[in-house]
Length: 166
Image (cartoon, rainbow, N blue to C red; front, side):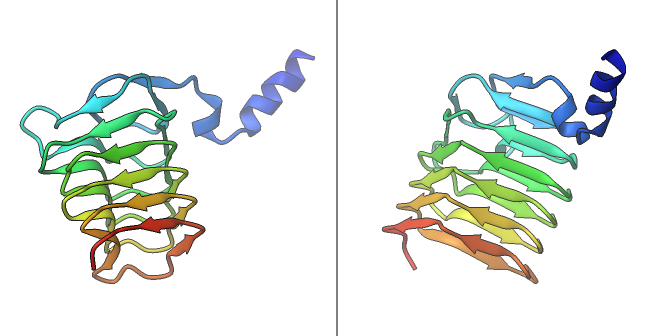
């Protein structure tokens, strides 16, 4: 029986086999793993231009329904130069310039999340291809979703767009 349990754990993708890492403040994620918000977050990480930055591949960030709230500048969540990142169940609002940004990233997923009231883009993809944006609510941002600079083969499915600018 122990051998079967070990075999099942070894068969799981690395992100799923680990215990979640709790996130209770703005932070930079630099290692693969499963991360979960345990509180509402606000502002930016120190003097950086983002609240959460993901620059490791093979990451899941589960917002668990918590909010990340800005005050007029920067990125709520910046995902940069990575592959296989999932952001889900998070609300990014209150005036970041960019709610959730994928930059030079592939095979990432943004799902079951809300971007609301960001001063530029709710969701912004720059030089990012083969990503999925699924089941999100994108509301009252200056621009709902933008695909910029060779962002190709992205799947945008079953999202709710409300009162975004042009």
